[in-house]
Picture 1 (cartoon, rainbow, N blue to C red):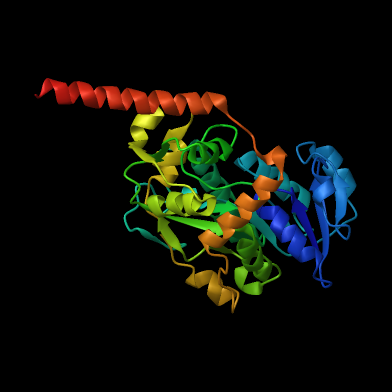
Picture 2 (tube, rainbow, N blue to C red):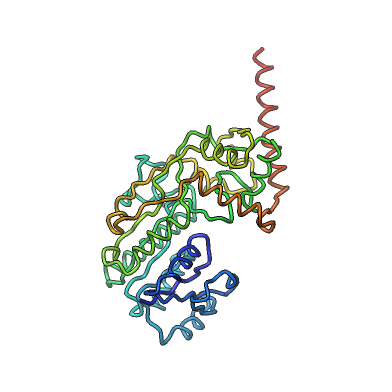
Length: 342
């Protein structure tokens, strides 16, 4: 069977690429700009192109047909319209990576299924994903375009440690603060539930949906069944580092109001909400699949990788200073209020 991935080297897609490369029944092609080609297995074919240059992509794909095409980097409907023009009649299944952040916020029920309404007033990213899904479902209903929609949640790999509050340069600065014994900011009071999924687990379920007749015209969420509070998440990281956790709690709306970072979408529209996923649908479609990597196992693999790869230790002094300013500001406000009521 022949598959084409648009992208194919990101956090989610690289795990699928690596696993699929070891399966002799699949012939895999990646269409991307080749910026991460050094990480691609030798058996994988690369089509060097910018998918946004539609004419060039069409020329390079003109004599090719696929059993499966997946777009990992489509964010707005115009990009899916382009994909439809490129792959109409050229694939038996078109898989689109959407996002679990598209689910209704605030949630009416903490347990999420694929039938949970899609609505996120806090995050344009999520609203665009919803619009992409609606466009594809319309094509399926009206023209039979063979779509499958995939909704990942917080998926991570060995290259980074997944966290709630971090700066624009990733999570390493928070890890550094932990190691230095400094307080780290946790949104809210740390008691809301969250779900972390290792990319290797995601990949196994995704591959099980490829070429799967039960996946056509359907949406699936692929996440771990393990739900942890943010307090447990941060404590697990601290335990793996062998340090104590100094948690400092700050309301999400306050973080968004005082920071140069987009916490309205990332926190209020996503991570501040308790989310527990019901994965029974994907388990029915892919018998035997279950997430196998616990968070404490996955985060240790990430920390070991980062500690042995200096290029992943990206410091962010601006974010570090901002954390200190937020914490000092809240402590000063607390002291003033305490003094005022004495």
